[in-house]
Image 1 (cartoon, rainbow, N blue to C red):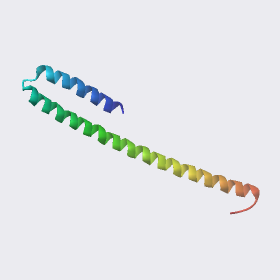
Image 2: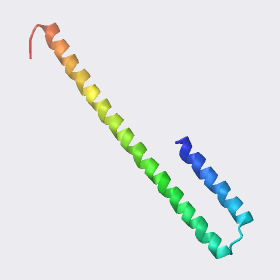
Image 3: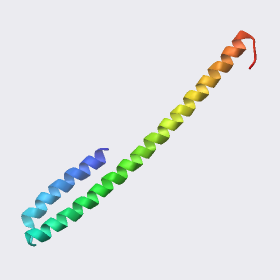
Image 4: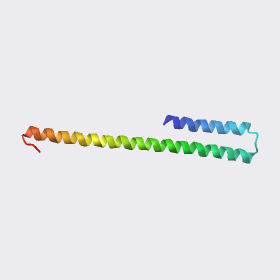
Length: 85
């Protein structure tokens, strides 16, 4: 997550620096910056999708672990009570 924030901060600093030394017209500079911003936002969105997928995977694994623990607890309870099931 820090990488995305660092990227956005760098993008902002680069945009300001680009405006200060831009040899193009204002319109050309605006188009250039808009393209860079779109590219940056696409990268952030892509990183967000990856993180979302990783969190979903971890949640699924956690659910599986909980289900296994419940099953093991039930089995232990049945054994302790002297019945099998």
